[in-house]
Length: 234
Ligand code: BG6
Ligand code: MG
Image 1 (cartoon, protein in one colour):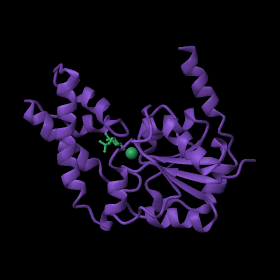
Image 2 (tube, rainbow, N blue to C red):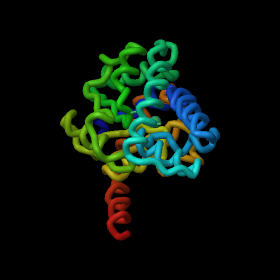
Image 3 (cartoon, rainbow, N blue to C red):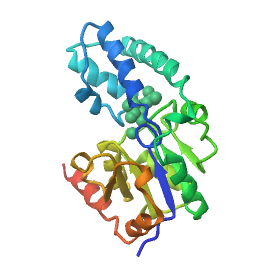
C-alpha cells in the first residue's frame, strides 16, 4: 500500500477562482479583434497555457497572426488580467482551500503548488497564502504544458517525494491527465462528468479530509504507466 506524502495543488479553479478574470480578459481581446467567445469555449481554456489559449482563440475567430503579433496580443490580455488580479482579496480563496492545505502541513504531508500560470506568485501574495506551500512550481519554471506531467514531476522532485506518493488536485481535464501521466494519484475538483478520469472527484477542497487521502493512498497509481503507454503507441 502506498501512503500519501505530498499534495500538489493546481491554482486557478482549485485554490482561487481566477477563471472569471481570464475569461473577461480573453473576451475583451476577442471583442477588440472583432468576434466573441462563449463560456463554453472558456471551459476549453482551463489549464491551458497563455500562448496555447491565444492560439485556440485566434482559431475560433478564424484569424492568423505572426509570432510578433501574438506576443503583443498575449501581453495586452495579460495586462488586463493583472489589473484584475491586483484587486483580489483573501475572500476570493475558494472554500476550504486554505484550511485543507494547512491540515496537510499539520499532518506532516508536504505541499506544492503546480500551476501553468506565470502570475501564480502575484496571486498567492494578493490573497495572502504565499507562505502556505513548501514548493511553488509555476509557468515560469516549466516549458511543457499540461497534460505533460512536467509541472507536477518538478514539484514532487523539489519536495523529495516519489510520484506514486503524491496526490494532485486539479479542476482541468488536461491537469488530471498530467497527474496520470506522471504516475500520481489525482483528485478532480468539479464535476464527475468532466473529470471522470481522476481517482476521486469532489466539488471543492472543503470536501477533502485526511480519511480520503488515506483511501487514495491505498490505490495503485499505475494508470500513469498505462496512459504513457497509450501516448507512446500513437
Ligand atoms: C492556468 C489557467 O492555470 O494558467 C489558464 O487555467 C491560463 O486559463 C494559464 O491560461 C496561464 O496563466 P497566465 O497567468 O500565465 O496567463
Ligand atoms: Mg486550474
